[in-house]
Amino acid sequence: MSNGIVAKRYAVALFQLAKEQNTIAQFEKELNIVKEVFTTNKELIDVLKHPKVTNEAKKTIIKESFASLSPQVLNTLLLLVERHRVDIVTEVVNHFIQSANEASGIEDAVVYSVRPLTDAELTSISTSFAKKIGKTSLRLQNVVDKALLGGLKLRIGNRIYDGSISGKLERIERQLVANRL
Image (cartoon, rainbow, N blue to C red; front, side, top):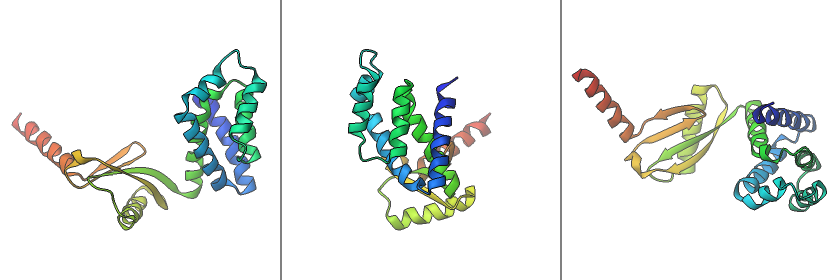
């Protein structure tokens, strides 16, 4: 079975548990911390994957490292360690967050701009584009990209809304080349 399918099963099980206990937001915060630790700390993953380190030692590392997490999230991590599935932790987190977003009508998006946007501008973008994609709101991450020259570019999932000056210039160029032929 592929890692993606396995990760999704763990995420669905954890999401159902969070939904029953009405702790989706808490689990999401905790899992984001776990994801950050697993993506930034390569040494931890190396130790957890090392065949000479016993499972008990690995579990102790997880228990000590993530002692502040809720028992359900901690037990999920311990289960992944026990079953030698440490490599799918970030995928489990991604699937959980996706499920949480779907349940609450939120979508993650990245907005590219020439300068940092204010909270009011981000809120305005969120409300206008959320309606277009059938969601209640967007959780926006602002990335400053000087190559845009001006305007905005918004990436929601695999869709890109390009209102940047550089994007418009590229479209004009393609149109001119196509008309020349």
